[in-house]
Picture 1: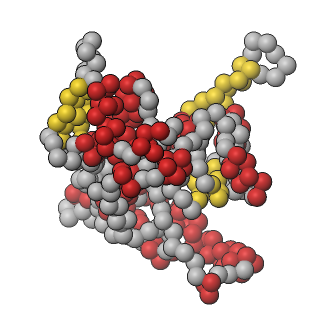
Picture 2: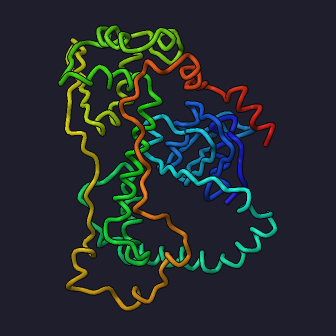
Length: 346
């Protein structure tokens, strides 16, 4: 695992870093430009980057990696739906002054705990390998393999069957709300559908209709779509998360390019069980699994019962001001001047 990094300048730098590290950790971030969000999505589930090999005219050098990524910042960094659907967001408690430790003391205590932490991680891996083929989930989230592998480790971690996916689903629900609140188009659509069951029309009519629900400052900002095709693309991006809050968005494949928005079920992945959990009463776990240390003793996993409370769903878009709109604007080709300053501070 490499030391804490600043934001890369381009995709090439990100892929080189991934090629030389098993886990990428970026610290003290304020914003994520669109191009970096897309690159993180590809890297989290596996992707490649090709470039011309040095000192050649026709040879290509291909970087291909799949890596976990840790992002740290004070503000809400992940607002784009595609990255949010791949993320687990953890709000850490503030460290009080009387609880702070000098680095020397912290690392001394960490070195004492490291054998137990490493042993707990190894036990979790053993549980994953032993139980993976027995896991049966009623439905799979976006990160399907991640959900299956962690569910397989539940017995050795001492977690009740299905508790991980329950906590993960709750976390994803909070991520959905956070992402939708950061998307002006999604907020306007939710206001439009607040007192109706369905809406139907083309993108041009929808753009004109939605503008009645937004303030002039947002309408004039760069984050608001000025053309029908831009609105259509934004709506397609938001449709996955809108479905999770009960709004179905359909795009006609005929020549009229009709868009239909209707109230739906709003269901998301909820139920889970493992084959091992079903068979516990008939086939008790192997004694070697029972004898495995419980990671609860190491304090290495969060309380699955704790869930972040969703934000107020009825917050009006009219409360947004011009500053909010400008804050949501990200550069698409390079990091912003603020990011340059941030990197210099690090």
